[in-house]
Length: 208
Image (cartoon, rainbow, N blue to C red; front, side):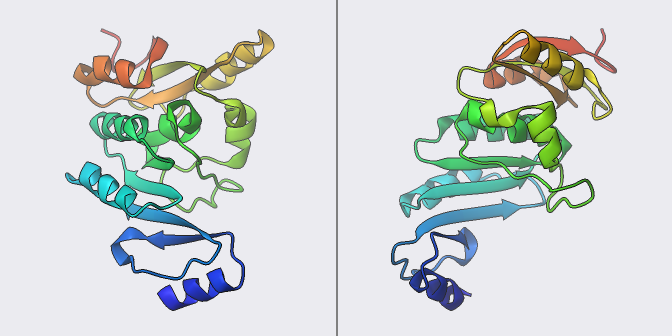
C-alpha cells in the first residue's frame, strides 16, 4: 500500500491520504500528506494523545473520524477540534456528530464529508451535499457564525433547521441552526459552552 502511494507521489499527486495506524515513511515528492485516523467503534480513551502523535509527524492535515456514541463524545471531539494548533479535521460520525459535520469551519476544521445523494453515505451520520449546501449553507460558515439549535432525543425528524436557517438567510444573519441529539441533559451546560450556542429550542424528552 505504501509503495502504491509513493508511486502516486512520484506521478504528481497533489495529496496522499495515509492511515496513521499503517504509517510508514514514503517519498512524498511534492505531494502533501493527509494523516488519517478512523474509529467506527467510538472515541478511544487515548484519542488526544493519538492526535498529538499524528501532529508530531508534521503532516499537511491531521484528519480524525470517530463514532460519537453520545453527547459526551460530541463534546470531547469538538474540544479536540477547537484545541488543535495545526490544520486538522475532526469528524464526529453518527447522528450525535451532526453539528460538528455541519459547523466544522466554525470550530477550526478544514473539511467535512458529504454523500452525493441519500443512500450513498460512506460513513454513519454523513449528510448529503444538498443538505450541506441548501439547508445549512455550510460553505459560508466561518469563525464568527452564531450557532443555535434544537435539543432532543430523537431529533433527526426536526424540521426546525429548514425554518430557522431560511429566516437567518432572509435577514442576512451569519447564523446557523442545527439539530443536537442529547442523551444526557446533565451535559447541556458543557455542550452550550463548547459549541458556543447562542440559543436553543427544546423538544422531547427534555421539556422539564
